[in-house]
Length: 163
Image (cartoon, rainbow, N blue to C red):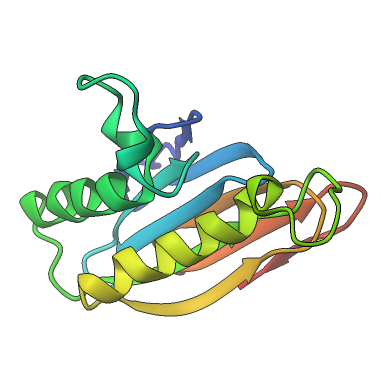
């Protein structure tokens, strides 16, 4: 009997979880951050495609919590813990500077702000970042395999590499 492997796709401002043998991926990370939380012993992983750093920017009270680093990461942690994950680690990718702006223009530093917000949210939850591929000016597609704990990254016009 063979086990069917499914790739679970995570959209923008979305969060999902998988168990081995399935993998999880998100497309189109520009200034957004793909944050993977995983328990390698249990083969459980989750991925958040984070759009913005801070939910205090939300205009509506019912705004999607998966859109923001400060709310999506705790939600993802809770989802994984409910599935039995205990020894949780993190990997992250994205946060590119997709738009060139004048020096010192804080408004256009969305990628940098997202990187800082994800790092801070993980620090507050005592989750160690094992590896990351952040910054630069190229978008990324990422796929995580809970069996190997490898995050595959493809940048535009580049080969796939893993962290």
